[in-house]
Length: 550
Image 1 (cartoon, rainbow, N blue to C red):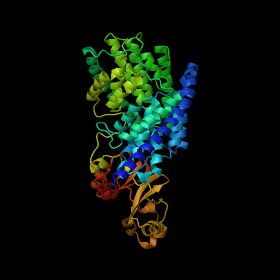
Image 2 (cartoon, rainbow, N blue to C red; image 1 turned 45 degrees about the vertical axis):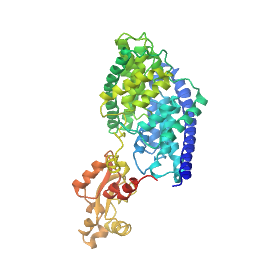
Image 3 (cartoon, helix red, strand yellow; image 1 turned 30 degrees about the vertical axis):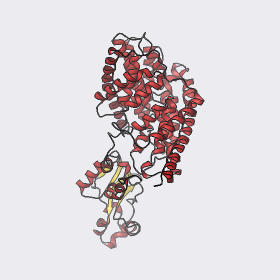
Image 4 (cartoon, helix red, strand yellow; image 1 turned 90 degrees about the horizontal axis):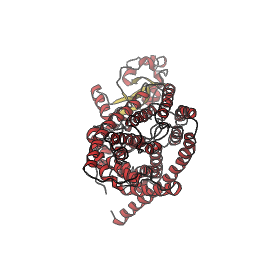
């Protein structure tokens, strides 16, 4: 390839990344002004009774928005970015963007204990996906996610006023022990442009100003290791609770889970007010950081607030709240560090809360590099980098294989191995033909067997899967009886099925065990689509993916 042409393509990618970053920074600034400064700012000054009832109202409106405007979209934001990053050959679905952003505005504006970085990442990734779709001719197959990653980087950079954190987080979060590759420059340029646009509107003050500079003596370094180990274990438990809340909430009726979660969060707001004299369980938790670094709080009170804030976030997840988990991890880490500082007799030190932030965030999202840089950028004190790095590294030792995101992969895998560990959604055919149970066999033969030449067709009643019918089932019945025989009378109901939450590997195992080439994919009892052996293997796509980059 002509070096000049290659250089031009790289320059185009960077220019588009700057455009994505600028639009993302503008969008995040507007969202922040309306929701954080406007809606939540007024709520934070409202009477206690209004603050207590607001989360229930916010979760209710969010659920209605996702169901009606989003047509049943789930509340994922940052997870949607991570999931789609691993879905090779599939762009992020932009149809529910407006619904998810509006639902996140209801969630966060009502004081639910989640972070603004979730919708910021999602907005940036959506903008990047939309622009890349229109400029796809300028990108190779291996660059299909470049602008999506760049947009996510800009979203984090803008909302936290931390450009390096944004770039690192977007590259680090798809994997637990690896980094996205070939995307560094676009992510950096996009993060920088997103940051510049955001601070031009909302100012350049650090997110969490911190006083003092660590001495970096042996005691400080030992404290970094200790806090890292403790935070890793605590983050592991927190991640389990988050994932458990996500999985359990799907089995509960939306109205019941919203009512239970909203009411419980209101009770926790009352508890936090009684414990600390302020409603610190309300909102993303920026006020909690300022409260935590004050030296006159007893350790028991700090630990109590840590439990209250953690429970409020878990309940928000269970109630279908739309927001991020980055800031909740930061808040938990700051409170944990402050508690350790109080136990060892240095409650006035800002070092311990900062170490807790680096360790808890680095472990919870498995992003130790981004966590360390976030500490430096958000506090305005680069002197915290070394002890923060030690704490973040130590936390990985006790974190185990968990993460707050169920879509992270451990590392970058080979194309075939990686395909098997992808979520089943990456190979499901949602456009496969179905037949209703009240159709006659004559209609089935004419429209499916002969019309579109399908040998096996799922039988679906409304949205509910009821069985499978194929050529062999029809031929067992005399031809003269076809006009009077319904599909429901000839279908089979003993065929194996797959669930939407499976991996490709599990579906392949089921296919081999059942000695079939296709599985119906269900979400509970609802029909989703088909997965076939051919769709899983797609040898041509695998070979194409393993060709050397020009």
